[in-house]
Amino acid sequence: GESVGLHLPTLSVQEGDNSIINCAYSNSASDYFIWYKQESGKGPQFIIDIRSNMDKRQGQRVTVLLNKTVKHLSLQIAATQPGDSAVYFCAENPGYSSASKIIFGSGTRLSIRP
Amino acid sequence: GAVVSQHPSWVICKSGTSVKIECRSLDFQATTMFWYRQFPKQSLMLMATSNEGSKATYEQGVEKDKFLINHASLTLSTLTVTSAHPEDSSFYICSASGQRYGYTFGSGTRLTVV
Image 1: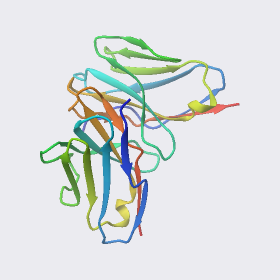
Image 2 (image 1 turned 45 degrees about the horizontal axis):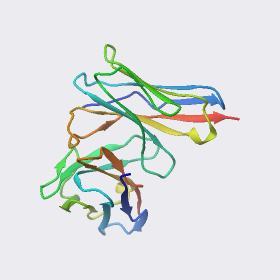
Image 3 (image 1 turned 90 degrees about the vertical axis):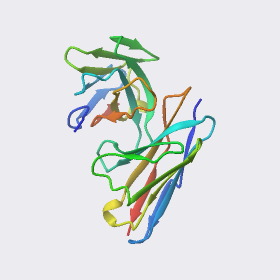
Image 4 (image 1 turned 135 degrees about the vertical axis):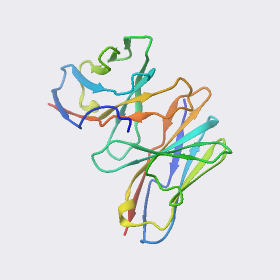
């Protein structure tokens, strides 16, 4: 079936350093991508999104990069803080309409070393 | 911003009974709602997509007679787990999508079947 992402890895980062979380997607027709943050026992929280006509988008302390050639997505978090500890999921929307379902990747657990 | 309320946040039920989970969009009209299930240390798996006033569309492998979805209004969708068994124990999360808003997630419901 459709899938986004690889197995669930864990990324350990020193507080204050930059974090880079990667994601691979399988549907070349997908035109909208979203990064979510999920803390334990809570629902996913929107971080940033990007459409397929862009290759980079920046938010507050976060940047998403999209490489459609290799179907790769990355999330960069600048100056990682303890509050950034969570599981991060990339998700893809195969269609432009909000009625289209979104498919989640397997996620990456980010842990912060003091 | 868009807010989605999910209730209850946790529930324990006996095997063989049914449990209803509610998902409400508080400040916008949700034309489409999505229901996900998440097992420990795994990603969110889409169960079904529901459009207001229509029958839900279930993902492959999801039993529609076991997981009853109702989306009778633009602000409320319910998921009923019928004849629950211990293997149905999971974290259930809803997401609502409207014309002005993308995908907003509820805080999830932890279901434990004993």
